[in-house]
Image (cartoon, rainbow, N blue to C red):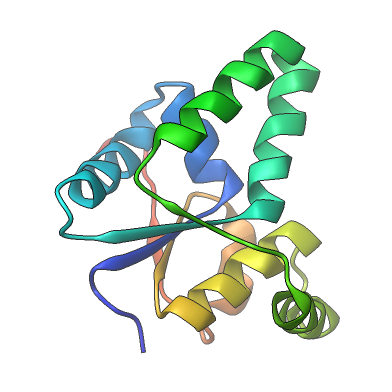
Length: 139
């Protein structure tokens, strides 16, 4: 069961946050709650890597380094890709049509009881496994 004060960011959510998109408004709100210590926010190290490679590919290494520094300043917990996380993500990937990185988000949500923040339609596939808070353009 989802913990109403715990959230897991996926790559979509974090990119929306850093790019200042309207879809990132809910992410900004949740991060502020974490700053105020009224919410816990988690990010898998796998998804952090995905954000970094996407940023570098589109905007260069310097921008990716800036994003990494910004991530390190956010009030969130980076979850490692330890053996248990890898086994959980592999099991999810074997049974659902989601990307491997998204499987880590799902595993993190199951482990923490957190609600996934995303606008990625791939998470429709697993709405029976985890709760998803959908990021909309008009928030």
